[in-house]
Length: 55
Image (cartoon, rainbow, N blue to C red; front, side, top):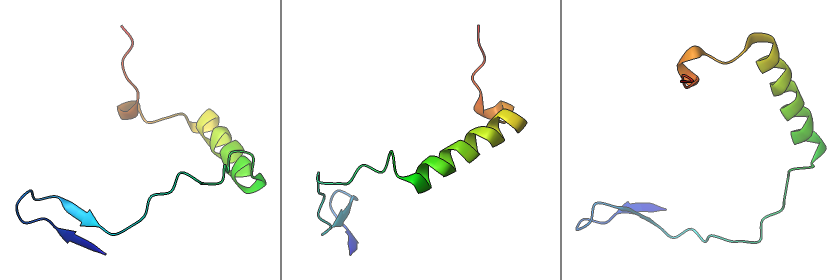
């Protein structure tokens, strides 16, 4: 649940943040998605607006 602190204007939540999170880096689903994304980028490239100009 989110609510806004009236004095500071910040959003406050009761969510708990945990450092015990599973690593999904080698999960077959995510490996497959990453490979598919790389193929699309190799085929079509990135939009020019996303690339920084090299000097």
